[in-house]
Image (cartoon, rainbow, N blue to C red):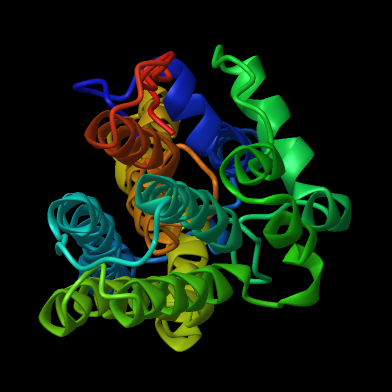
Length: 341
């Protein structure tokens, strides 16, 4: 997530630097051919270009609106996880009876709280597995996305927070940690373990039936949030809208200097060269509008436009550890170079 009030020049170049180069080359080429070779046959009237630009603006606006909805829904999902996590642990430590049969109740509670923290990091890691429609540049990055992402964060100035297995090893038992490879959806398995553990507390009369129902309701909420996030991750923004907007954008930018150079030529020879910066600016604006929606529609891609899942997980981790009486707390994750992960 970008935390600066405005984009800085590095973020702008990172987003659209390559596109700005080829737009500049194309606009300069058209102006040069028109000026030195007087190729008036290649120019087109401005009216059809303007109509295409208007249609493209409407389509990109619709796409960006849908992309923002996906991004904001993803943020609301993680906001719900924060609130439900606090409720879950507070109820876990508040509920008790006088007829309990488990002597190590505090250890069992701590084990459940630790397992919840492990679920957070496991769930986050599952959401960061790249899909074919996200902005993944190479096949190598798909297979080594964990190390690639760690290297990007370190290069951006973040400390090395370690890989998710380190967090899992810290908060899970050896047996639970070793069973990770046996499950395709390890986060789902962790919640099922939580349900069994809570049911055992009820069977041993450490909590009442009503207490167990309330705690299970929280686990059901976690399942719901997980399913909602997986829906966003595994179902892309409909490609017919995304692809059409991209094609129309390329068509408009290709035709833009062909229509604009003729208009500026009416000002004289100097007007032909003046059209270059205006073509670049107009084309770049449309490219930026396209890219903003293109990146925002994938809020779990591991890029600077994402929901800051790592910092949210760390916030929940700190809250949970404080609620169970731990004193050795990790440091909160702060933004670096205008980016919060």
